[in-house]
Image (cartoon, rainbow, N blue to C red):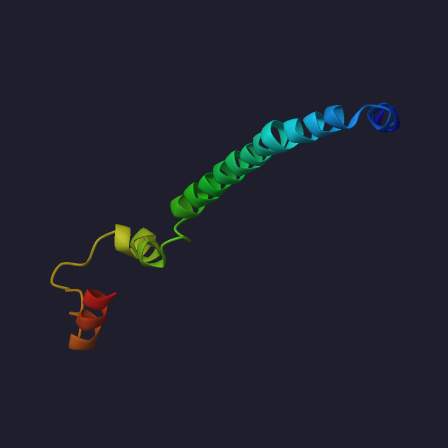
Length: 93
């Protein structure tokens, strides 16, 4: 099939060859590239959603999903307060 097309194209005048080349450059190539970009964006969003649901995308959220956190704290037991360095790094970051 390719050989037949290129044989036919070689027998055409220059204006036909230029018109076919321009059609490819203006219509076909951008359409193919747009399709690849849409597919890549869809895969990226799907991967981000899967990583976000698993907790791997945001390491700070992973700690909240542990069982000991879900069970709640014991009565009379308090979470340790953040030090001044931790508070400063959280505010900056």
